Length: 60
Image (spheres, rainbow, N blue to C red):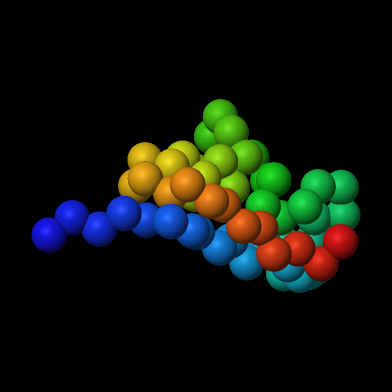
């Protein structure tokens, strides 16, 4: 049985205080890991899985 992934929710809210001082300048989900922002890995995985809606829950 094949199921289609419709929505993916990314809880990216928060101040990122555990990542200080790096998060003083850039949001934690945008911190670079190797060659791209951290959130890009999660987005790519969701799209590859067939997600048609991506929701980002932010605090800003």
